[in-house]
Length: 184
Ligand SMILES: CC(C)(COP(=O)(O)OP(=O)(O)OC[C@H]1O[C@@H](n2cnc3c(N)ncnc32)[C@H](O)[C@@H]1OP(=O)(O)O)[C@@H](O)C(=O)NCCC(=O)NCCS
Image 1: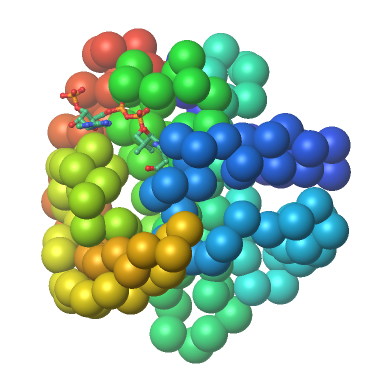
Image 2: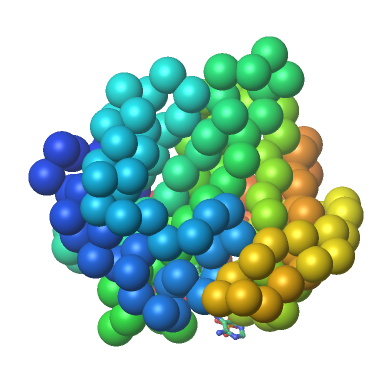
């Protein structure tokens, strides 16, 4: 089963190890790889929860990845979605699909957001296909928007509204429960 649990202080080291992995780093559109001190400061801020929330994605109770929603302090009732499945053995097995459904429930049902948006590297076909399946729509295209390893890369803006998720959630959750990826 896939689940989301609140982050704990002891998670920082695991998250940093995943953040350094090339398969995670190559798709991060937000920033360059942080040094350990910057990562620790980021983690302390996230745990404080003033502007963001983070959850450990778990697979059979073991840590498998990270999901965060940030920008929550703004009055716009929207959140910026960031995520990765850090455990390489857990990729391509439905962990992302399940975590996405659980995360969208956190965003819209628990936090009461109206919108979730994401910046995705334009060549990240896997994330794009997966997010489209939940109802994320393409809302913009930012040419040569980020600098990764000396190379300028394009970014796609995705967005999903509370009503988009509401119209899909029951079917998606039923499929995930049938596949025994989430609890019924
Ligand atoms: C993108 C990511 C979150 C997807 O999670 P995952 O657990 O690997 O994905 P799932 O197993 O749930 O895949 C579900 C669907 O996503 C799509 N998908 C996922 N990875 C894919 C890939 N590499 N290529 C093509 N499609 C892919 C497929 O449509 C798949 O559907 P299928 O079951 O019909 O094949 C994960 O692979 C990851 O963290 N990758 C590295 C970092 C990253 O890209 N983060 C997202 C930044 S926006």
